Amino acid sequence: MKARVTVLGSGTSHGVPMIGCACAVCTSTDPRDRRTRPSIYVEVDNGPKILVDTSTDLREQALVHRIARVDAILFTHGHADHVMGLDDSRRFSQMQKSAIPCYADALTIASLKKSFYYVFDPQTDQGGGLPQIDLHTIDGPFSIGDIGIQPIPLMHGTRPIIGFRFGDFAYLTDTNHIPEAAWPLLAGVRTIILDALRHRPHPTHFTVAEAIAAAERMRPQHTYLTHICHDLPHAATNAALPAGIELAYDGLLLTIEAAPRWT
Ligand SMILES: [Zn+2]
Ligand SMILES: [Zn+2]
Ligand SMILES: [Zn+2]
Image (cartoon, rainbow, N blue to C red):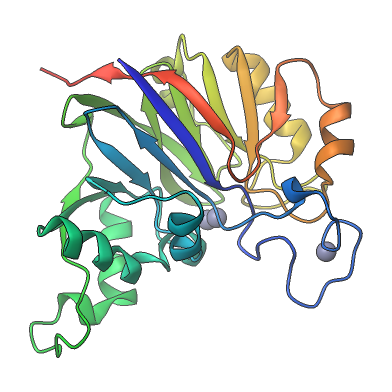
């Protein structure tokens, strides 16, 4: 089953350009050097449309990429850059006249309930509308419509988070360590999107060199690096990367082979 993946945002938590920065990347005229907060959209023709994370830039991303439907939201973790657009999901539940199923681990569900307390408080004045979401705790492989999804355990500093595998594709953002338990789940993957913040070491994100090493062990055909900060100019960084590895950019479109639902 063919699916399309759109990289909605390829930037780190600050976004690129970063507020108040006049560096060469933040002032670049290359559109690929403009990076919104990290998110992807996975869509199957006549099948489910799945949003991974509700980034701070969700509204802009939905407008730019003409996203008019979201059948489910998957959360990698509860950091601000991955959840702060959640309020804008109310537009999708309004249009679809139904709550949106949201999948996350227990830690992320707890942090969503704190960050968006008003969504879960029955006393909240409905005003301009609230996001209508149904929370589901991820505790193993799950399905959305015809699509089977494999959660991938990742470490993000000391915090366990979740990557997602859809058939021959895996989205592995916000990680600096892929635990041993994850490797068998990634066997045979053909396309990956993998965290690579910058060249300098960071306590919770892969550097470019660390991401390349992880990709070499995973052996996909195509690797795209994401969650990129303003240290990495698109064109010059790409020119120095090994064959089969390149920087993602906002608007990058990939075709993948999704897995059928789990039976
Ligand atoms: Zn900058
Ligand atoms: Zn994070
Ligand atoms: Zn992040």
